Length: 446
Image (tube, rainbow, N blue to C red; front, side):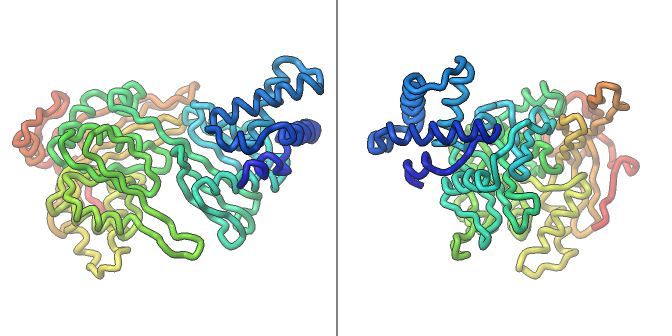
């Protein structure tokens, strides 16, 4: 969209008809005053500063008489409408907001500190919301209309965006923006109560000893955050390939290759799937492969990579328990076009997966590692897992905050020996079981 078209677009502010009219009037006056050729040559930040300065002169010259606060708000709204995303612009500037959810023009929710709240903001109309959506998706060369009513994309600034419009969305155009997560370290996650020091030591030993780790959890439970923190434990000299639908991982090592899938274009061509990238990564001599999330046939390729020389790889999967994670891996693996017997997938999973780290998002918005479990089954036998850490919650009090403690259990001797061979110390809180405790071993039906 040209600069003139963006400023002249017939949008209104979201605070009411009178305010919207005022914004529209001053946007038109701004268009008359500026030199579009000059503006087009400026960087985005300089363009905003220039527009604010010109608009300030117009208001001083022609009125209306406004307080300092009202004047600043009017200038910001006019420039936001002209160059930014209007009502959403201050929300994107608020670092405390992790998710923005627009459920039609009259309903805007945000997530702060794990809690969802509705804001007293609105778009003036469906048309204004659609213009904002079109402006967002155009930055990634996508379009949204009745023939293409759903868009899932990543903005150049890192936010994940999902759009769905009528007739699929009955409440009006729906927009969800998930902010790019900050890269937390494991010590920071301890401070947030997601795990404790003994668990950090154990997970660090697993990663350095090249255990294959699956991070499991529901939506918004912190899987990507934990995966990013765990990846920081990989030695810096190793070649790491990350594969994601929307690139979120922020690895600090020097030898990292980041791959991102690509959706089909408007003609339905050019799609590059996670599976395509996993297969290609095997030809790139990786030391470790990190898959942001497995959700289809690429699961089989990932399992085969884990069990054939790419130890120490990591991936996430959507599931509600460690047992469910293994069953989901089996189901996803069967979605491959390779005709492999369902029972044979047990063999693949038993030989590939060493550790399942289960995350849970609690009612108070906190995210915790609720279980670390080891897969100890072999061949095609039923999945057998041994929990070595679990979160034990206490009854919720009047403050509705989830309290509890982490319980640490003995490690199977075979796992302790593998850590010993890798010269990784066993954390003091974990003992070594003489044999696998039948009472402490859970079976998942496979």
